[in-house]
Length: 230
Ligand SMILES: Nc1ncnc2c1ncn2[C@@H]1O[C@H](COP(=O)(O)OP(=O)(O)OP(=O)(O)O)[C@@H](O)[C@H]1O
Ligand SMILES: [Mg+2]
Image 1 (spheres, helix red, strand yellow):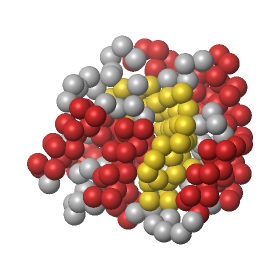
Image 2 (spheres, helix red, strand yellow; image 1 turned 90 degrees about the vertical axis):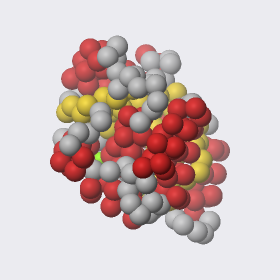
Image 3 (spheres, protein in one colour; image 1 turned 60 degrees about the vertical axis):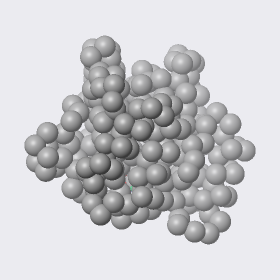
């Protein structure tokens, strides 16, 4: 899979989800390797990988930094060498995001269930539609991230996505705002590895992977491996 995690809205969890997905896919039984492309000048995914390498000795995947056209070059050169390429495209409508959309087979749009974020979806959906003209294999997914643990806001936002953005396939369950995600990111760990284990966060990440089409068998390998070690 070549996956861009992108949204023109900042701070919705693109880097957090991209890093968690990269780690989870690096546990896949069938192997093949994961390339994480940090397309954001801020370098959050690269920082995560560095913390991870310092904490564990090795990240378990390869991370490179690339912007704009370099993202395309990286994908074209590396697609035969890795089973999965994950692109953290960074915030706003930037060249890395457009490059990612041009060469990916999937795009994941994290959406926070808050008004400004929902309004910004229109621009993101338009970008995806534009990219689909030259990249018709692009499949677009949305997931709620930083979701509320309770209340009706999540359901309302999901309803907006379903009704107003039929081009975005909504993945469930929502990824709730949980300390496990921010604590893990700070330590270079995915929520699959963080201790104490947070079953809610683990379930949401595995649900996200299923929604993206990662096979159940491979998921079991991920899940069992981590629970054995936990
Ligand atoms: N599900 C979550 N639960 C708790 N905290 C989260 C979650 N997702 C993201 N965060 C936190 O929210 C903040 C923004 O997340 P992140 O940096 O991943 O967003 P981003 O979309 O990559 O931002 P930017 O647009 O700046 O690149 C970070 O502090 C991160 O730790
Ligand atoms: Mg980011």
